[in-house]
Structures are given as C-alpha cells and as structure tokens.
Image 1 (cartoon, rainbow, N blue to C red):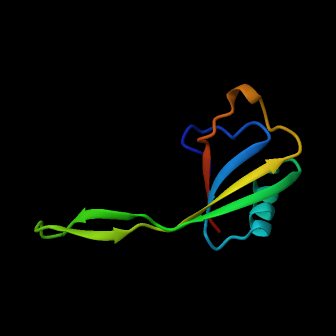
Image 2: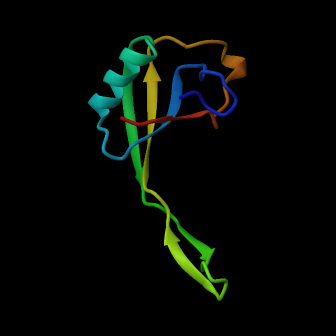
Length: 98
C-alpha cells in the first residue's frame, strides 16, 4: 500500500510498517516482487508492542484498557537513490501485510 501522501519514499532509505510475523528475507522478497525496487543493501527491523489505550465501556459507565495491535517497522537501505533527495520525508510509512 502507498503511504497517506500517495508517494513512494525517495532517497537511499525507506521506512515500512510491516506485519510482526515477517522476517527480513520475507520483506526483501515482497519489495522485490511487488514494487520492483533497486538492489536492497540492508534491512533493519524494530518490533513494537501494541500501546495501551483507554476506551469507554459499551454501556457508558467508566473506561476499560485495551491493548492495540503490535507491529514491526522495517528500515530498508538501497544502493541507489529512489528519487529526488529534496522530497525525502522521514515520516513516509507503508503498511505491508502478507
């Protein structure tokens, strides 16, 4: 999926939000197959637990604590830049799911 601004990331690195079950090999294979990106130099991954969120109870009397879904962020580094370095935005994120 494309990020919210609808543009592919530019520069030599990109940040993707991926499913926690995906490994580095799975991420590389997916990006090569779907997006046909240039040679991937390396991939770093970071796992995040779902944060706690306070939500109102269905009957309206008080609140309950709900844990949000866990996710993984993959930082992908390329040998050649993807596009104009000027337009690079660190907050560009994509969601990849199997």
